[in-house]
Structures are given as C-alpha cells and as structure tokens.
Image (cartoon, rainbow, N blue to C red; front, top):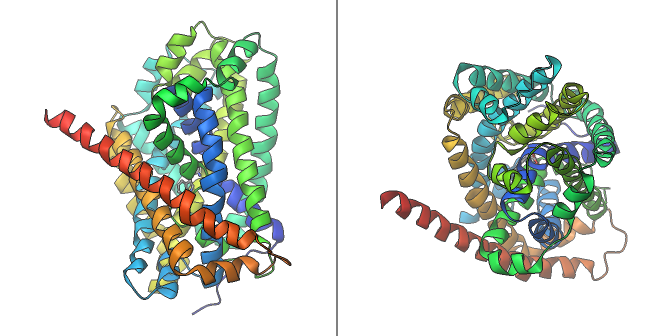
Length: 449
Ligand code: TRP
C-alpha cells in the first residue's frame, strides 16, 4: 500500500479543522436555531455546551485519530476487539446522511449568490425561496456542489484539502468581519443586539427540555463532532502537536465565527420592514437566512452586492466543511478496502449525490428535516456518547498517553479531562438522547393520531 499522506505544514491541520467546523452550521443553522429557541437564551446554553461538552469531545476524537493513524472504522478496530468497534460504522453512516443534505443546502446558497450577482433578490423572499428549493434546478445546484467536493477530495490531503483551506479560511474570516462592521452601522443594530445578546434566564428555565437538546445538536454539528471528522483529520498528524492547544484555537475560532454571523444576520434582518415577531416566525425553520436576509438585501442600498458577497462567503465555507465529511467516508475505502483515492471519491460522491436527490427535488423541506433530525439528534450524539464512554471509562490509557505527547507537562489536566468525559459529558449526552427519543416518539404518535 502507498504511504499514508500527512499534512504538509503545521497550519495545515488547524486550517483544515477550522474549515471543517465553519460552514452552514454557523451561517445557516445557527441563526435559525437562535430564532427558534429564544434568541439570547439559546446562545447562552449553546456557549456553555461548547465549553463543557464540545472541548472534551474534540480531544477524544483528536487522540483516537492520532493514536491510530486511521479512518474512523479502522481506528475503532485498532483500539477495540469487542462490539465497541461498531462505533466506526455509526460515523460513516452519519457522514453519508449529513453530506447528502448538506450539499443540497449548499446548492441553494450557490443559487442565492447568483441571484445577488444578477441583482435579483425578490421583495417576497418566501416565494423566491419556495421556487429555489425544489425541482430540477435544486437537483442541478446539488450536483454542481457535489462535483466541487469530489474535485477537491480527489486531489488528496496536501494538494486538495490543505491547499484549498489555506485560501478559503482566511477569506471567510476577512469577509465576515467586514460584513459585521457594515451591519453595525445599520440603524437597526441596537434593537438587534438587544434581541441577540440579552438572555432571559426565565426563558431558559421554562424551556430547557427543548433548548438543551437543540443547543447540544448545534454544538456537535458546528464543531464537526460525533462522526469522526476530527479522528480522520488528526490521523494525518505528526506526534509533536499539542492537541489541547490546537483544540482551543479550533473551538475558539468556530465559536467566534458563529457569534459574528449573528452580529451580521440580526441587524440586517431587523433593518427590513419586519417586526420582531415576524422575524421570530420566519426564524422557525431552514428558510430563515434565505428568506429574511435576501428580503432585507432587496431593501438596503447595495443590497445585491452585499448579498452576493455574503452568500459567496457561505458557499466557500460550506465547501471547506463538505470536503471533511467526504474525507471520512473516502478514507475508509482507501484504508480498509484498498481502493485508490480517485475511484473512491467518485464512487462515494455519486452515491451521496443520489441519496440527496429526494431532499433536493422535494420543495416541502420535509425530507430535509427528516435527514437533519436523524443525523443531528440521534447519530451524532450517539457516536460522541459511545466514544466518550469508551475513552473515558474503558480505554483511558490510550487517551491519556496520546494527549501527553506534544505537551511537556500535562500535570492534573489529563485527569481533569477524563473526569469531564466520565460524568458531565456522559450524563448530559444521555439526558439529551432521552429527550430526543421522547420527542421522536411524540412526533410519530402525533402523525399516527
Ligand atoms: N461543522 C460543519 C458546519 O458547521 C459541518 C460539518 C462538517 C459537520 N463536518 C461535520 C457536521 C461532521 C457534523 C459532523 O457547517
């Protein structure tokens, strides 16, 4: 077998991981979750979960990946001889499902970039969104996006992924910062910041059974956790990196960028003719940034240009995330099945495209919701929970040994990390999985009658 690739530079790994983390999760999913679950109340719970759950779990994936130098399925085979091995499969299935609808939404973002370039944002945002999200055009933009993903991943770790994230990640940061400054000059900024930034503790207490699982799903999705992306990316690393330091940078940047997206999105939204109540109503769903933002862009000076820049940035961010999901599945075929990279990429890319066609063609968004909830509320949480139990309770020495490499003096931090996994992470994830199971049961019995 050919020698396994590694990252060419120190920055390569961090940029690739940031590129993976920052994507539609930050720009498309985050604002509508904020809108749906109570504004600042959601933000507070989300930030807490990033620190308490996201940080320890990203370290689990990093240590497992670097320890084994394998794709997630191979990694689990190497560290376990029992049925824990099957966690690797949860990851691959989750990746397949997520990328199939992720690419569809990314195709819509591409379409909205084109609308901006054409000066075409409609005053009736909902009608335009409805026309974009179903039928052959939506299948076509899904195909174009998947073709781009296949192209980058086909070029491999250094020439494909590392090269492209070095261009994409700085571009995302610069463009978003510029947009946030611009949004701050809008007269609506004050009202928008109040909605986004002053949490009401009563709201959290009254709605925690819905806010907690939603915020957790968002935390996992945005950090690309629970499906082995970070295992895969860390498997291309040398032994000398301080994984904890890298994790702080990656988690910090992803969180800062999501937060900044809120600083762009809410002032732009509030600048339209919509009242807060209308915005919250639109916020209830995947159409949020598309409808509300494009409608606002149709109203403000230079709106089309700004919109093209905004949606163009999001397309780039989506691409740098989508390649990471694809790499998980492709690395499995390369490592475990001995398939060459290019055929593996074409095969998986085509299969994922086909699996996403129902989501793309159907204009009602119901397939989208089914895929999204299956992946985020169940698969990602399950994958992360099982892996955290395995490293936290069963194979503790693997995690500790690997974390210690590249850190001169781990001191008590290693133990603190293991205990964070053992109790807060495991308990919170079990509670969330339980709440999600109840939610799914209620939804199903609601349909049956
Ligand atoms: N984190 C990315 C985003 O916010 C999406 C993503 C990439 C992802 N890889 C993942 C989500 C793995 C879950 C699991 O857009």
